[in-house]
Image 1 (cartoon, each protein chain N blue to C red):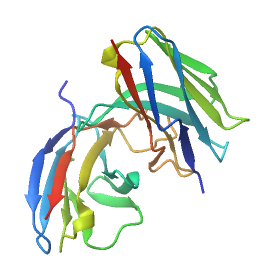
Image 2 (tube, each protein chain N blue to C red; image 1 turned 30 degrees about the vertical axis):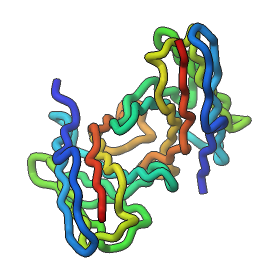
Image 3 (tube, each protein chain N blue to C red; image 1 turned 90 degrees about the vertical axis):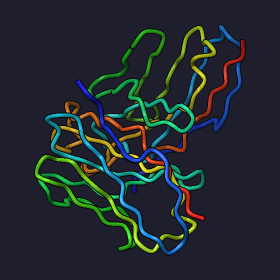
Length: 117
Length: 112
C-alpha cells in the first residue's frame, strides 16, 4: 500500500514568489492535513481538508491556502513568499480526520523542503 | 490551550544504554497520545499510539506509558543502537480532534 506522497521534495524560491506543493494521500484516506515545521516553532498545523472542503485552519496568514480534489489529492499554495516561510511542509492523511479516534492515525509524507532566498 | 513539552531537548548515550524520553502536557482531557520518530530532513514515522484507556504500549524495544492524571508520557528505549539516533516527538490531538499538537522533540544520538 503506497504511503503519502509529496512533491516536490525540495525547492528554492525568492521572496515575493508563490509556490504550490502537492500531496497524494494513502488510498482510501479522505482527510488531508498540512503542517509546517521550522527549527524555531516546531510543527504547527496549517489546515485540514475533507471531501474537498477546508474544515479546520491553524493560525497562519491568508497567504497560505490549499485545496482538495475529488480524488482526495491536495495542494497547498503560499503566495508572496517571505524568508520566514522557509520550512519543511508536511502533509498527512487519515481516514476521516477525527484524531480523537484511535482508528484515525495520521500518516505523514516525507515533506517538501522550501527555501526562500 | 494544550501545551506539550519534551525534556530533554537533546540526549547523547553510548550504545546499549536504556533510556527514557519525557513528554508532558497541560490538559489531561485527552483521547490518545502518539510518539513519532523523525530522521534528519525526513517525514514523521509513527512509533506508538496510546489510547487514554491504556497505560502503556509496546513495540519491540520501545515502550510508551501514559499517565493522564499527572499529564505525562514516557518513551522507554531498551538497549539503544546507533540506528535509534533521530528526533522523537510526542503529539496529541487538540480538544476537537482536528489537529495534532506537537512537542518540540528530543534529539537522540547513540554512539557506537
